[in-house]
Structures are given as structure tokens and as C-alpha cells.
Amino acid sequence: MIRMSWFNTVSLTLGFAFLYIPMLILILFSFNESKLVTVWAGFSTKWYKELFQNEAFLSAAWVTLKVAVLSSTFATVLGTMAALVLVRAGRFWGRTLFSGMIYAPLVMPEVITGLSLLLLFIGIGLDRGVLTIVLAHTTFAMCYVSVVVSSRLVSFDRSLEEAALDLGCTPLDAFRLVTLPIIAPAVISGWLLAFTLSLDDLVIASFTSGPAATTLPIKIFSAVRLGVSPEINALSTLMIAIVAVGVISASLVTKRQVLRRQRDVQAAQ
Image 1: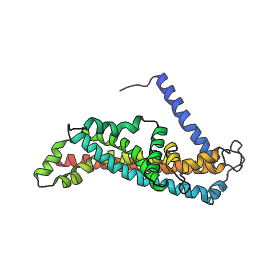
Image 2: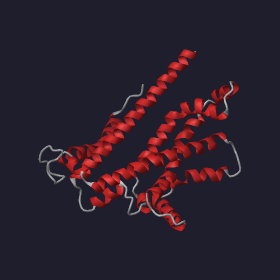
Image 3: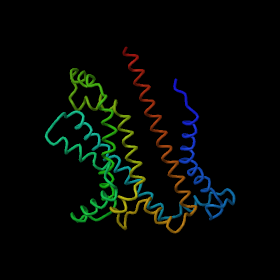
Image 4: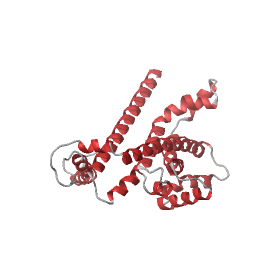
């Protein structure tokens, strides 16, 4: 059993405090009666009521959620396919170039990615809007999904697929019935990561969005320039709550699948 030294304990405590105390302060002041975000004047939920009456924030939130769901879904499908090619296809002509193109957005500055996508959309005559943001977010989120799924496929037992093929399954059925349920936790983790990256993106969205499609990070960044209002605190609190519920739900589902798989293995043995 590894014991925590006082130095590690203090370092972790300070690190977590530095990370989470500002969030707790933000949540606390979202219920502040005063319009001043640094002066506590009593408990109130009026800023949440005003937030739900703010059409600009609600429209930006809807665009952000729509873009995040679509781009994370597309990125998960494409990233999983890319991971299968990288892990299962072996060595083929152009593998180095293919893997380099997959992993390039991981190290590419977002400004360069956003600018290059902007020039591409202008070159092909595509008007900036929800579609261009979805395409941009899918492009850079796909590589993160590929990395997560590839790490799971590397340790995957291929004999399970071979047994399914020997029992009469087609390659597609073997993947759907055997491989996909086993790598499902990695696929779900990749989807959540892509969803979070899309929800949080500001730089790439600022290059690829148009007047008719403004995401929530862009709207918040524009509003903060004039000062932090309690409505922004309320909006940030709701976003924290949504992300927390999503992460907890995904963790519970993944844990349930792992326990079910362990029970099945024990029953088979």
C-alpha cells in the first residue's frame, strides 16, 4: 500500500483548491441578490429568471448544444473508424502520412486550424454557420476520439472476434456484437471528450461561425468584455451542472457495464 507523504497531500490539496474554489465562488455568486458580482447582498434566483428571458444567450446555448451533439457524434464515428484502421490494418502504403494527419490537430495551434478552415470554407464558397462549425469541430475532435479508442483496441483480445467468426458471424456482426460492446467505454469516453471540447471551444468557432450562428463561448467572451454580470455566473453554473450530470451518468453506465461483463465471465468460468 502506497502512503501519501505530507508534501504530496499538501500539493494535491492546493492544486484542487486552486481548480475548484473559483468554481464554487462562481456558483455561490450566481445566487447573489446584488448586480455587483463581488458584493454579497443576499440569496436570490432572479438572475436565473433573467437568464431564461435573455433570447441572445438562449439562442447561443441552443446553437452550442446542437453543434456539440452533432460534431461529437460524427467525430466518434470517424475517430473509431480511424482507430480501427491504425490498429487492425497493419502496415500499408501511406500509413505514416495517415497517422500524421490524424494526430496533427493534437499539436496544431487552434489559431492555425481555425484560420486554415476559414480559408477552406471561403475557397469553396460555403457560408459560415452551424454547418461550418460542425465540420470544424469534427475535424479537431476526431483525433482525440481516435487516440482514446486506439488505446483500448491495442489491448483487445482478437480471439473473441475469431471465435465469433468461427461460429458463423460475419465481420460486421462480429464487430457489432463482440467488439463494439467491449470497447464501448472507450467510445463513450471519446464522445464525452469530443462533446466537452466542442462545448468549450472559442478560437476555432470564432473563425468558422457567422452572424446567424454564434456559439455560447463567443457570446460569453463578448459579454465579459463589458464586465462580468450575474447572468453569466448563472449560465456558467448551469453549464457546470450539465457537464457534472453527464460525467456522473457516463461513469455509472460504464461501471455497470464492467460489472455485468465481470459477472458474465465468472458465470462462463
